[in-house]
Length: 224
Image 1: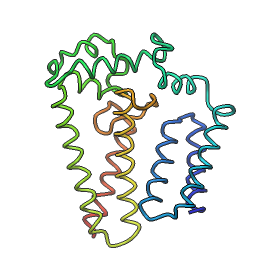
Image 2: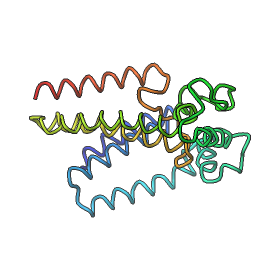
Image 3: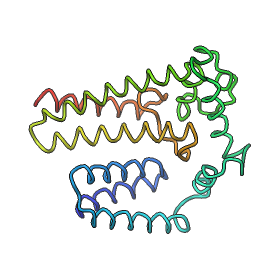
Image 4: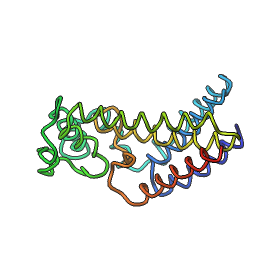
């Protein structure tokens, strides 16, 4: 646990130097969830949580940039800066709510098409889907993701070595965290961190990396 923690800390530290606070949290989340799944002792888990809380508290005063602090404060109270940091969250919430059951129609979303919703092709693509395809469209998208994760979990049962198990498990956790964080920040349940929605957000490097990870998982499964 300590060796893996040191390795993860090095990666997290390098990512924070970018600075990319969102991706650093994803790395920590993957590590924590993998420890829980393999059966870490409760005392060790509580110790890790305590260390993370201390680091998070000290980071607020010594490490986080002003714009990162504003994102967290705006997440707590979007009305404190409705035309600045809180604008994205407010417009995303309006877009998601206006979609209702069946949506406004593909290409007819007022928030996205009239450019009220910023970064509609990347960070807030979920709000566009919810506005134009409605609740039904969102359920269909989540159903496809459910099939995707079911296939990965099914493949886990056929892996013949621990490395393959942890590789596929880590890839699954990365996608799960990205989905939860991205959807959460679109509906106001998580701060805006720039986390993409896998295979739906426009992008280059993350899309290529995601395809690489799926290919690695498939390679492990077919060589069971």
